[in-house]
Image (cartoon, rainbow, N blue to C red; front, side, top):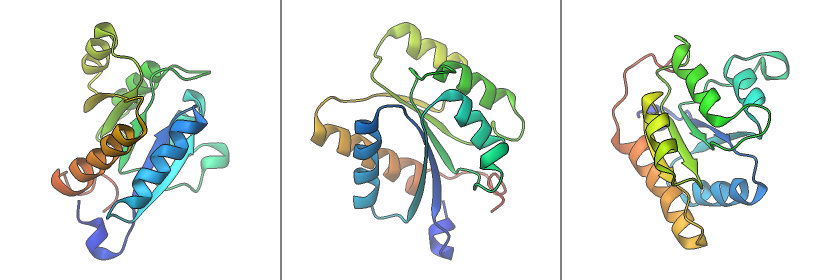
Length: 152
């Protein structure tokens, strides 16, 4: 991703209802080497409103990457993922499921819905930080994505 070269921060949307996991994710991304603007929504309905720039989210940036928990209030993460991948304006945004579930049916279902990758959250603090940093390293520095996906 070349946005960093041009001084434009990377936009990441975190869809997570656990305040502790939000805090840990912020800490891990702050320690990283990329300039990241992290937006956070705490339920599936707000996630879709954010992505579709509806209501109070009318002026938000389009994310370069979505970190999605599965177990969300109001609208489940699986439903959010299905909506993202059905929407021509959103389907090319990489979605990383970052969840506590290691259930095989959740893993299978999310891949059937075209998730880009599935990661089970570690419960250990240091391992959690390592996982978030590895997401940043892989998705924001190594992966090559098509031009124009995020108006860039």
